[in-house]
Amino acid sequence: MKIALVGATGNVAGRALETLVHAGAQAVALVRHPEKLPESLRSRVQVEQGALEDGAFVARATRGADALLWLTPTTFGAQDFRAYTLDLARNAVRAIQENTLQRVVFVSSHGADRPGLGHVSFAGEVEKLLEAAAPHTVSLRSAGFMENLLASVETVKDGRLFTLLPPDKKYPLVATRDVGDVAARWLLDSTWTGHHHRGVHGPEDLSANELAGILGRVLGRPVRCQQAPAETLRHDFMMRGMSPSVAEAYAQMFRGFGQQDYRPTEPRTGETTTPTTFESFARESLAPRIRATSSRPGP
Image (tube, rainbow, N blue to C red):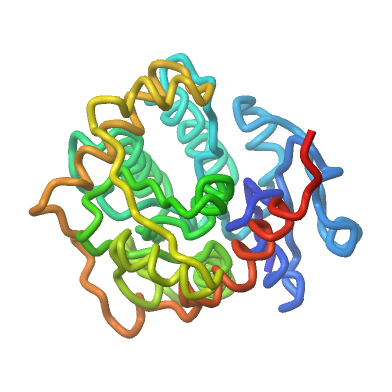
């Protein structure tokens, strides 16, 4: 079985690639920077270097593949985030049609079935494009990634966890390695048919207050949760280097997720529940970075 993956130097597709290689699948990694692939994998996969913005490259690199893992790469600079997302998806559609690709696994998001959620709603549009092009698709409507908290190392080190969502409202949270494992299982299975939307919810729903409590327990010192004012969202995102279009898409997502009546459409089941707990993620990934930062000498 030949399986093509985009984003293989990232967390989700990188984990899926590792799983596929260990399972003996013939893997094709579409990457912009091959040097970012782990050396242990680089020699065991077919590496295709190019940009997803190049439709001819995507079609050429996926030739002969039985399945495709698709995701929209993280970008801060897109001047029109929706157009960027859909243009990439149309390149996937071209590849699917030219190469008669049978199965597509798309890393989507919970909320992709709703309007007004910024780039999450764009993912819903991508789902429809892929479903119209490929005979068999699954959209993994993932929870928020635990790894997003790695951007908060400095503030957590100082005992503060800022949240853009209501501090007491519970949300699903998942480790990217678990999303990659789920994606790999679908990619390796050549028996499923049709179009599916599958939740990937992590082990439990947690509020920001609960996250702060877990972090405090792991670090051995109090961590206080503090909600950032909603009216500053777009400005703060632009200060982080996002284009106005990307910043507005993220702000719309957080505003939508922050509504009291918002719940993911996909129900939590044994199948959508994944194993990595937030506490284990905090101990294995977040705490070591915080301690390393704390031990650095000052200027």
